[in-house]
Length: 196
Image (cartoon, rainbow, N blue to C red):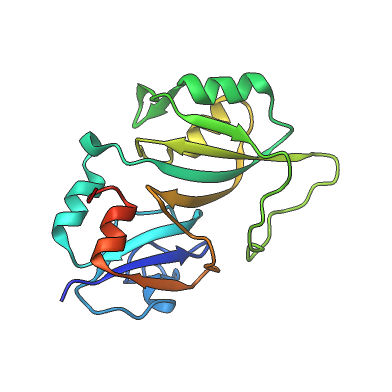
């Protein structure tokens, strides 16, 4: 039986069901059949939307770069981000991936006027009174290793907190860290743009 889940992966949890070096992993939070696995990954120090399924056809369609599924990240950065930095993130920026220069594809970068409604992080971001922070929404159609963090650092605004909010039309709305929602194949596949 094919199963489809949307989860909110908490901060400092591995995107896998087996622990390494004593770190928390998905099985500490989510009980799913043993043949269900994450589609892609989310870094240990990132949080937010992760898809789980045992449908292997979905895996290929979601992970192969040629399908270019849009992923939206909500990013808290150090400092008051400038219009120039937003423009750089939007138009494409050269970052280093595995020692090679990579020019990012055009993205959609928008500054939040007010802090978004997100759950508190555990442990919280270290608060520094004299250094402001900003929140941006960054939507990408590619997923290089630690790409968002590399992009914001390159503009001079290091990432403090990184939440994947959306893949296609599926979001973590109404989910708290460690929560899961099961979807039908139809809703899941339409949500990520595999079905019309």
